[in-house]
Image (cartoon, rainbow, N blue to C red; front, side, top):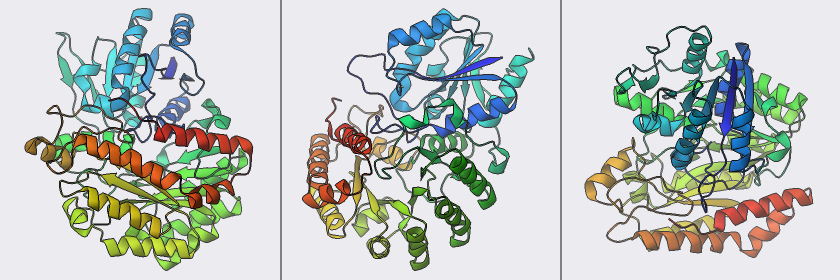
Length: 483
């Protein structure tokens, strides 16, 4: 059986390609979708003929996609969809069905999980809700053997009457070590880079799934979002955290080193769980001279952790700060204080580990122009290496969505997919939609064009190609988008 994974081109004029790993922005710099590549690896393990077609990375057009579909003979097509890619992917699905009326289309990711009915345009469409690996494996086994797949857990489809049939959920994976490593051989590794790491070949890794904390707005990755949407819909609670063993993580690092990778970005919601777990992973990275970075909470940064990060050549720690205002931090249930965040930044600075701060404009109705200005100014005084400024979005399935809906803060009345690095669909009585967008643009310019920022980063590039990739990423970040 032949299965093709597709990352379709942008089919609508003047639209920008969605980033499908984090899932809530357009592309700043391309990242390998290891969530999708893990599903591909599972299917390769089962002996299927797997193809992976990334039309965005290779700058292939709609015409190229239609030519591919005309010439292709896959039995199943799979598309990982996020909210920002939904309209695009629904159109592509219609083209697939028109070209291959016998082929089935698997819709994976948070958008199909949230909007299952919209993705079920024909009997050919199958929505895989939540965590995909085991559901896709069972579906493909049954389909390949011409067995009935219509009752398997974790899918939505159209019944014989054309009505949406949502099957019961599938249990979440606890043993992540049972999964194969992502099928990175299916992608062009030279095409990926991370401007924070400035070294290639670069890839991403995932060592755990989900986060135990209760931030009211948070959708940290597209896999987490799909997992949370499905679990909350059936239990009303967040999903449990699944973790890979340090031994399994080290084995993947060994494989990547053998394949020549020189940089890894860990995309766990919270990579630093305990010092004991971090030590063998950091040792493996150091052993192979791999530069790396991760996402972490401020309260995970201790003196020992900061020293360990420095010793193993960690090139960035991405801290979710959102605000330095204690009242706002309490409102959004961050379970952190201004003092804890400042302490973490100072520890990382002490050990010369670059700090990236995520700052969220409009994270609560308590936000004002002044609180935003104070947060950015403090980030600069604390010598943050980089900041990521986003505008909060009321993602369905979050507590913040319910609050925004109840209080009439959503422009237009309800959520629509929005690029949080450029646009707002919120408006508070004391901070309007337009004001948030202007502040975002102004403070991005304020931070990234400081002489200290420009000079400190110029010194780190090891090649001209790495420099131009970073310039392109910055241009994508700063280009203002139409709503």
